[in-house]
Image (cartoon, rainbow, N blue to C red):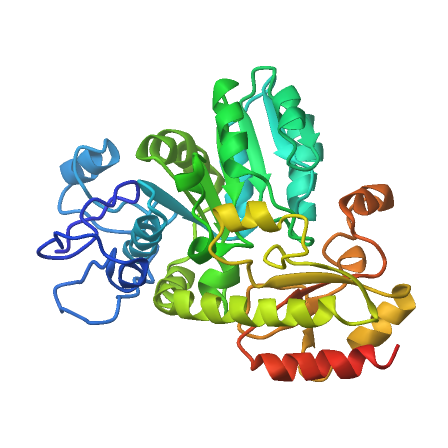
Length: 410
């Protein structure tokens, strides 16, 4: 019988003899967290079961009392899910991980498990629309106060964190305009205010940014994006200390049903093996496309943090290894002109997903951010002529040709 790998610990992430040197992230992405069955399979096993049996009633009692290591129920933990959690934790440099069914499940669980009525949350104002709804509508309905901070000026963050605060939430880079927040600076101020720092690292991916090394306490992902990155499954993940995952996250998630399915975990586990290669190629393509758009006369502005002309360039370079796979830009025209450009694309698909192997484009004001009031969208910079483009693995020259022909139509 394979010994249970606890989902809140990953000390023994390599089977057999442990390497006595520091492994590169790419090696960890292939090797960490592997727990082979007695059959000695090379590929990770897929355990598509809901429950587990016990040798005796006494063993079941001992397992539920956490005196015996044994899987209990796949809503709590599962061997395949645990392998994904342990591998991602090793890759991120976190002590532990809990995998959720979606990225928003990860964001909501990380926040909801950490606060109660009367608590105070501080967050960056630039964020994905669903995150905005959770922070400004759902949590306040529970008696939680949310304060939003625009930009990265230290004085503004210092003022917001001059009062005791429970959680600071950062989405950096932000969706869709790739705004950057200084993780080091905010983490220092947050810790002085008694807060933990939760970073949504979806747009950067584990390859291009490591928030825990910059002072953050918790990292969350939509694993649907770059981790799968091939448009197949939904998933999410929360990473932090063993204490945070075991004593804060698990008591909330095991009773509210936030767990990831074993099949999706298996797909994500295999996807981690190629994530670095995919994300690096996406970043190369994104920079080439951003440089092209920045010089085009029918483009009003481009948001990509690794463009030297971008307002976030210096900060992004100090905390990211690459600018990410998302490029947002404003068409020199109105909504009709923007739609005409999008409809003129041949290779690039219109879709609201991102971090995919295929290049996708969407109009945030009418899709991903439509739920928000117009004044909120405009304050975020999501105007009628704004488009968000997730750059994939195609040849950059083909993407540029497609964009050239589409822009020529307006």
